[in-house]
Image (cartoon, rainbow over the protein chains, first blue to last red):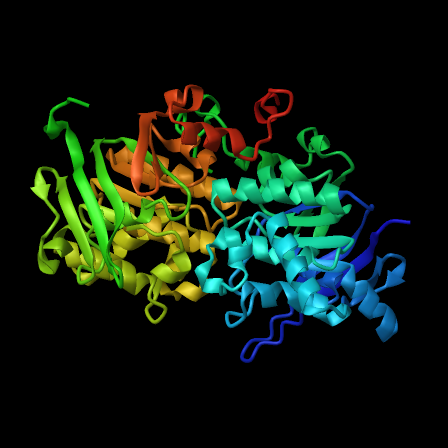
Length: 273
Length: 277
């Protein structure tokens, strides 16, 4: 049994406008099916407006899809009793792109990280403190950051705190929705390294949603491509991406920037589309 | 770099920027020296907080001078910019030096149409009348491959996507054929395909008008595609300046080496996949 199974999910947002009746079909998601195995990472790439974030929300249980099912550990997450749902939520965590808006600005780092734990476990003050310190150290921060507020951290540090919060309950699956996209190159590669380590240490699975092919490549095992709400390509092994003849993939591959000036395509024979 | 000053369009010497804080003056960037030749694309790389944006903003004197202290010399075609009055600076901004911001959504006024903002820029620097300015505006929008420029002309910024807005901003920057364009992370907010379109545009502006471009980015992919020379910045200082090929093949500074080593890559068995096909 796969850890997560997404079965034929379709979703549509109603376009009832105030002054216009616009009945264009705007399927945000159309018949999306895939699964994630335990301990693996699925990278989901797509351009903006492809429905990546909506799919993430569907999986997290925030957005009920109009058709289809999401099975997490064998349970349909939109159709279970409260107690099971509570258990499932514990195993399903998320890290968003914007680290500042995912934390409460009036909480300290300690409070932020402890919030999910307090929901599920009864801990003494001593246990609590040592738990938070070990989590902070695991993500590369230190004990002196305990009492700091979000504005005292940089974007990369705050993203580390978000990650610490996500792993505090030892979940099975973490949805990473553009988690490294707004960070600069150096911070991005450090966070990616951290995520890879944590995946091994805690036996985590990831759903890595991004538009950045290079980032998706460095962390994922399997790769899916979402285009206009449809999962147009799915690769068990990410290298298949380079052999696909799908025109959308060809265009995507063309847009990847050179990694060395020797391979640059822009400055020589410039051709406009 | 013992060449004569005159061959540089834009010349920055001994730039120091300090900001007033509760604990006294704090230095943001120090000892910045560089020159830009005609038609050159100069890349500026560094992580966030390294002073890239402060450097670019100080060239156009966009920083708040009440609590910032800008020292050093910034010359454009041998004219000193540092310390000019607002009124005199306005002559340069938009006409001689154009600025492309990172976030196109925030760079436009939401209450005016795209057309009004383009025409305002054009008319404040030329003697064209309204009709001619509109023609020019539509012309440049066409040249950046925007579909239906007539319709976009009447649209408000929020009606366009980020990629389109960024192209409008480039059109605005290019319409008066400035000698220098400062592009501060021009593609960071865009997705892959739009990123390519925007970079192609910048390249075309450079080759058509001989504009020098200061390209600020933390993305080494952008730098390797576009730049002729690269400066690497760390903690407010330029630690390495080199030709782009030398920098990628033979980085000198430890930090540059680390930067190149740690970036996410598609390389597999040391063979670049992208170019095997």
